[in-house]
Image 1 (cartoon, rainbow over the protein chains, first blue to last red):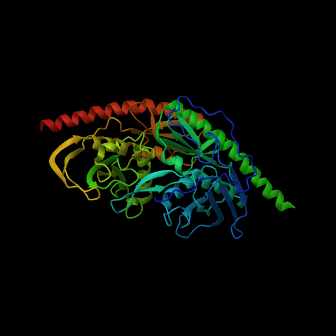
Image 2: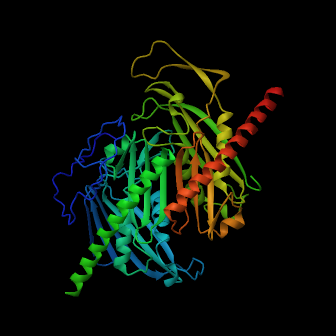
Length: 279
Length: 237
């Protein structure tokens, strides 16, 4: 990892329909041993401004483009389509997810990460929300493409065949999950609820919501939650690092609140798109 | 555990530490599901499950990126900072699968690590700063790996409205979702993964954590006593 990506979002060139100060909760700095000034001058409990737009890909049944600061993701949904002949008959639908990075997404070209890992995580996050019984015998394909991976990256030690251990980026996953559920809604696939996803990093005693690359590299622990805001249910949950139970409770509450707000933004974007069509 | 049989082995090799973490060793965890467990695991069938188990174990046992909260203390693996360190390869093999593979693998890995002895290394005194220093590995096993910090993984499976610990294959086939929590001796959560599609209420998750706390303490005590007994047997023979 030679170059550090630029993490400034102060130029707000991206259209963000929402007021960036989404969360104005006073930060909890009980004995902060790590004094951290966030590079894009956000509060500890402030998320990056989110931008969603549907209909990015014309040839797909549904698609969405999401931009969270420097992270840009396109998701397209195809289906329900006929399942391959090789697959067994099933009276509920199937979900097939695929996440891939473009070669120019990461600061070092071609550092395409483990695609199978995120694909299965995306699958787990979404399958709880989709009503599979409505499309038996068919498959819905969700293809996510990360155009630029600027933040909310989580690292996992991964071993390659040689003896080198490379730190691969596992995420941008929260953005991918949220974008995928907007795309599914755009495609008209029946779902119980939209899936909003947020991740939180723990640095010393402080909790940072929606961490950026730099912050992630110093973190002591991280928590990623994908949940359905209206049903108040968690579909996917990944925790790394050491957490004491009260700390964990706090982090989880933070994530749930943030995903409720994110859910509202997603909904308003979909309503906008629908009302545009009607005109 | 019951009818689930797994074998875990730990191998150590000398290698270079990564540029980003010069004072820490490296650990790689890999799980293989053998066809003896299930005929569907033959060839590429078990690959998906192996990948899932490997990544779940890596999440739980190796902590955050800065290394804090890692179950395995990586800084004890370094020999010469920035140049030579131990690479630990932890391999798990599933021989018989009757549900609850993750817990069994976690326990096996903990036991394997406690049995691990890392040979002590003597480094030649003079070494140019960018050359590999000469190392001499002694044959007598020396440093016992410290496993008091290694967490134990507990999987709680939600079936209908209740959740159960240590599900058999039959019970797992009926599960709506499962949460695997790894808790260390201090009762802190070291990692948590949710499997299965159905959504879970956050209060249920918190409840699961307290149950997992209770169960893992029992499991850890049992495991430690078994390991101590096995060590004592070894010393005698």
